[in-house]
Amino acid sequence: MPVRASPSTMSRLLRDRRGSAALEFGLVATMVLALLLFAFDVGLSMLQYAQLNVAVRAGGQYAMTFPTDEGGIHAAVTAALPSTLQAAVTTTVGCECLADGASGSGICGGFSGSCSSCGAGTTQRFVHVATNVTTSTWLTSPLKITPLATPSACYVARVQ
Image 1 (cartoon, one colour):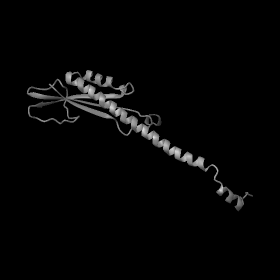
Image 2 (image 1 turned 180 degrees about the horizontal axis):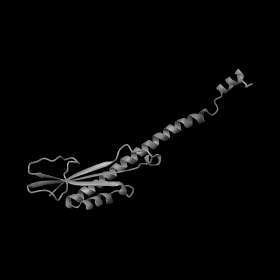
Image 3 (image 1 turned 30 degrees about the horizontal axis):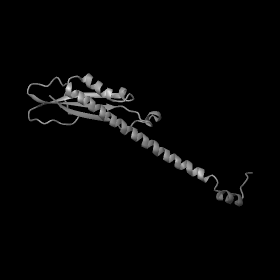
Image 4 (image 1 turned 120 degrees about the vertical axis):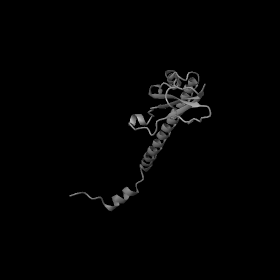
């Protein structure tokens, strides 16, 4: 036959408040820790995006001097990145060749092919350097979570 608790025992247990502070701390600390980890992860992603922008500018500056050296442009972008991001960078270089009075796209992805293939009558040449990097932030790597976005940057430079 099962043992039943008397009503006085049940009321005594319901009134007992020992340990409630520890329970509340555990619940609140879990939520605060999750928010802090998320904020850290977002901050790390923003840092990587800023580092990528600096690197793509370095590649664009190199492209202004050597617009046909795609390997050198990629090397300039890679050298400007921190070592943790260097292995995961992808750089795309292309040109937009315009005749006098024509207007360009001014955006990355609007380029057409190699910088050495501009034909006769070309008076304006724009080098587009588009770079993206596959990153793994502090939370996405150990938890095997796919990152929400792939940081990418673009630089358009007019060359002579």
